[in-house]
Length: 338
Length: 257
Image (cartoon, rainbow over all chains, first blue to last red):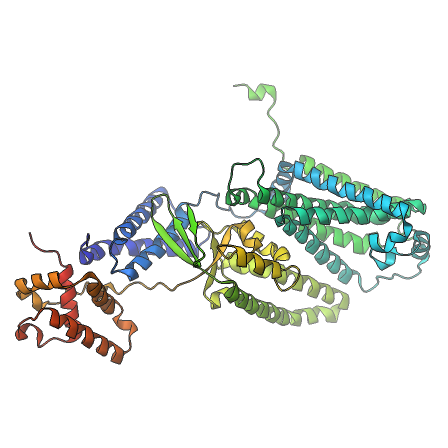
């Protein structure tokens, strides 16, 4: 027996209690900050408790005190050794205007890859439909796309009543939730070493490519552009960004080219994944509104030029946002010099 | 530095060389916690439907839209919200004494909570969390895919009460101290395992019911009384529990040099 237990406990107990009180406060208040003196005291108490635990480790007859100290040291360890930046109070404007576009740009290569995979799908889908028009049911598994595009356009343009009357909000909510679910799945499937994400992006591309070819061949390019561009500029971009996040996750799972453990790789991208998918959700809320309240109305209700202009305006705004927003102005040569 | 075994425990070794552990929750108990949470989601949704009905009176279209968004927000946000507010616990986990923690014993971050909950989309494929269950089964730390990506584990909370040190630190009168030569013999005779037994019995005295406690202390008392026989005037007036306390005090008390 290397310690006098009675004396040991009577001397150390007040320090353990003090540490326990500080931990309780820290756990109850997410944003509690301590001044230097308090931090030093907290650190001292942690080290003292850790040292007590080490000393008590040799004293087999005291499991209860050992468990108590283990619990204290474990809780304090989490607070003291956490080197990741503690989240500051959330500012939605800063997050949207700075954090989101910056995160997007930081992983632009993953976005480019996401676009490339989708484009391969577009080309494949387009060729497949051009070569075998009977494959439409497989390439575009939606009932309203199965018929002849000219018939659909004629029907939409001659509609005398609003077919979405009394259903617009409901339809909009359905689109938002469904598309967000698709985006989340696209991200989540990154955990399959990105295979699932690639599959989702490719199949999205296939569908898009076959729709484009089907309508362009039928001479309905204006209808198609006016129908897809207003909501598609946000919706398709959002799915591509979800793909970007999924590819990032997949890359972290595979871990090529980095001398880091899986845990370190995951830790380095986790904040970025959350930022990207949250931004995607916002974009899809907007896309849901536009698709339900705007995209579904065609000429003569809304002229195609107006719909296409609106879509182009949105797309240009989106590109500008991701390109410029949140950039710190680069110092000019004269400013940079000491 | 980490070390995990298949014994359902996770050991964290700090840079200072201190080791502490967590008990990992089994996939089965996690499934039960999830079932409770699912019931909670339905209950919350049912409660909110009253509000939805009010909206529906004004506009049926708007009411259904609110209902769709609400159900979706509950499905996605329920786990995230509770785990963030209650440091890794949802009501289901709280009830079954489970907690999500960082796999390295560090603070659970918001991004970790979001990722482990979003990746339920992959874990729940193709149905009934089959992918998640298979992943948890093969993972040494019982992690589903969401936990692997978020670097989290689900642990079982063992209630830790402050030990009853007053039982050892009572400082009550020890009648054996009047017989130092017999105390010295006692220190020689008592084996560590016997001392541990006596100490634990004293520390946990309040956890036993009265009858069991009396029987336990009687048995231990008889055992220790037989090891070294003290004069009747030192031991006859004291209870078995007090006798044990005296024995522990005599053995653990530092000897004067």
